Each structure stands twice: as structure tokens, then as C-alpha cells.
Amino acid sequence: MSVSVLTKTARSLGCLGPSGTFCEEAALRYLHRQDTAASLSFFNSIREVIAAVDRNETEEGVVPLENSIEGTVNTTVDMLALETDIRIKGEVVLPVEHHLLTPAGCGLEAVTTVASHPQALAQCEKHLSDLLPRAKRVPTNSTAEAARMLAESPPGWAAIGSVRASEVYGLSITVRNISDLPCNQTRFVVLGRKDSAPTGRDKTSLVFALAHRPGSLLNALKELAEAGLNLTKIESRPSKRGLGEYWFFVDFEGHRLEDSAARALESLSRQVFWLRVLGSYPADEY
Image (tube, rainbow, N blue to C red; front, side, top):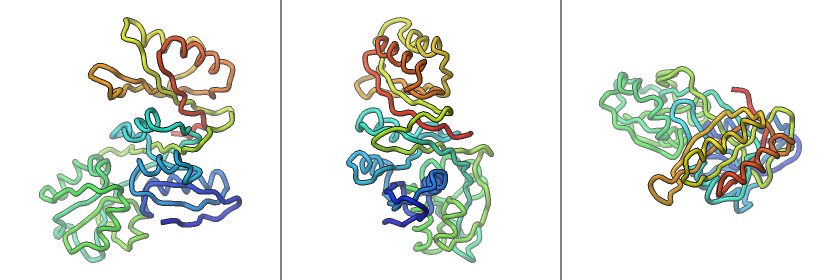
């Protein structure tokens, strides 16, 4: 499914669908900042969005990278590290408000089943346990898919979704703001064939693997510290090659083409046995 968003120069942009997802909101926010137009294509999964960019079926794609409550979106980081050569060229940090949606006229007492994306269900579990302790949870590919299902479901179903989803599918917001923690943000990244030119307020993401020897991680991070690069994220992920083997994902402030960052990355490449720079891009405000 595609929808046109018109401003200036047309391009293609993929995101997790259907219409009404937080991913779509992030994509529209990105386009507004760029002041460009796009043919917005919806995909059924994060994997499909990334694969479409990798196959050049869409020029850019927007996918979630991490959430302030549930942490990293593993599919995104693993695919960027292992399965593609595409780059991160932008980021959008989106405040997330989850609402309990029901068909018009359906009260809370009638709800027996709640559908939503697994992360949304997890982020609202305490509230759901208080509001609907006996209701069955049904995972879906996206919050908007849950809302679309709800619009076609028999009585007794509810969904967790956004205000936009309620408007797109003609649903009522029965209970507002049911996230368990008040500060709920999701960081989305924009993917493309190339990353972005320096702007002076940039961030760089990379992934590397280390040899099994004492101090290897310390020595790697020391290269970045001595260059004066401020780390904004460091996380380990299983290499999928066996127990005890990990890759490290790092974000730092600055662009890979700046002198200090370029020298640090060159030095880091000699400290590790594998390094991939995922991209440099304008940093969003948290």
C-alpha cells in the first residue's frame, strides 16, 4: 500500500504499516523536516522495510531502533550489522503515547481480548493487568495492524494504539495514556544507500567485534575517548556464532568525516578484528 505526501521533490520512503503506526508518524515527521515529498510505502514487518531499502525497491526506509522502556529493537540492529550494506542517514525520536482503543460504544467491561505489537503490550502490562486482568493478549505486527483488526473484529476486542490509529480506523479512545512509565520514547532511524553530509550536530553509529583477550574492549573504547568523542550508547549483542561471542554497537557524537572521528575510527580498526560504520547523520533532540 502506498500514499503520497506532497511538498517539493518526490522520492520513495518505506515504513512499517498499515497506516496509523508510530513508524508512519516518524516518517512523516522526517519528511516535514526535509521539506520533501514521498510516495510512502507500507510493509508488514521491520525486516521487509530494511530488505526493500537493501534491494533498492525504496530509496529510504524508517524503522525503530530502540525504545526508552523496552530497549533495542533486535531485528533492526542485527540486520544492519549482518545482512545489509545500507547506512543510517537520519534519526527521529518520537514521544510514544499508548491508548486503549475500542469500537464506538464498547465499554471497558466488555473487553475480553487486547491486541497490539508485542512491545506495546509489554510497555502497558501493568496498566493492562489492573484494567483487564483476565483479557487475552494477542500480538500483532504493529499497533496500527491491531487497530485495523479491531475495526473488523467481533465485540469484545480492544487494541493498544495511537490517536492517529483511532482516527484512521474510526475507533474510540476508551482509556488514555496506559503506558506503565510516563517517559516513553522510541528512536527511529532513516535508512538509505548513503549516510548524510556533516551538519555540525551529528551522530555516528558503528558495530565492531573484538578478540578474546584481556582489555580488548577497554583499548577499543580508549581510542574513541582519546579523540574526545562522547559516547551516547554502547551495547553488546550476541554474534550468533556461539556462546560468549558478542558484537558491540556504539554511538558517538560527531561525524565520521570529521578529522578527530576519522582518526579515531582508523585507530579503532587496528584494535578490532571487524568494524562496520553504520552511518553518520543529524542527531535529533531527546
